[in-house]
Image (cartoon, rainbow, N blue to C red; front, top):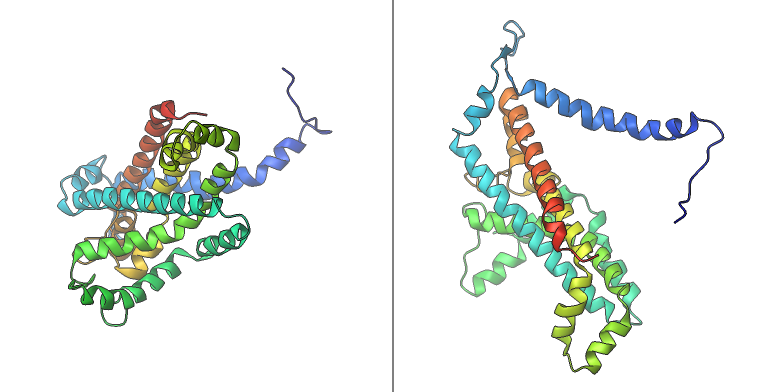
Length: 296
């Protein structure tokens, strides 16, 4: 088997081409990670710099796992991540299947469904905050007609539902594009053969289409979990600010609150290290064990 190899006129040219990406990675990923690791083993001194930071080994980590608020934040993050991932991927797959069956208007629907991805998370949060606003929003008005008193300012479950919908709504466009591309790459001969054998539409989807989409589904699951844990800060901050009563305080928002609001840098850095470790462990588990069930 022959492999295609690129030949450069100068031996320094490959390094020069890689240099911008390496520099960006060092500045924005490696250096902040190193600073978080170093800060996590220090206790912050006073605000005037008279008392320097104190080296405390792993006391910041031990304090976190004795903190009920932090343990509740772990549970909240798990619920929020699972809810956002399932909702965004489920709706995206449904839309992709429906659009894939269209012939003339497929491109128009694709264009409309991609637009929400261009909206920043904070803007998406503000938009859904208005829709769910108990005083101004349309959805609380509709829910009131069926007997449900919606108020995400007082009810933690309502607040969690709102941030999950706001976070998943923007991510549906991203998932939709991948699912649609995957559906269009499936040979029609396989589906037609199953139809001739008498398989109905649902059976054809679950026995042929969905297994062939498993590589894309697996990839999107990893991307969506990471998105829910890291990239939804703007949604939380614009809608609930972690409330009511810490009901929507996910880990990344607690890192911000403890570090930038309460100025507890040691605890905030320790939380950052744990959050980074959780994502690394999840990614390793997914690629090490779940990938075996994926049919490429």
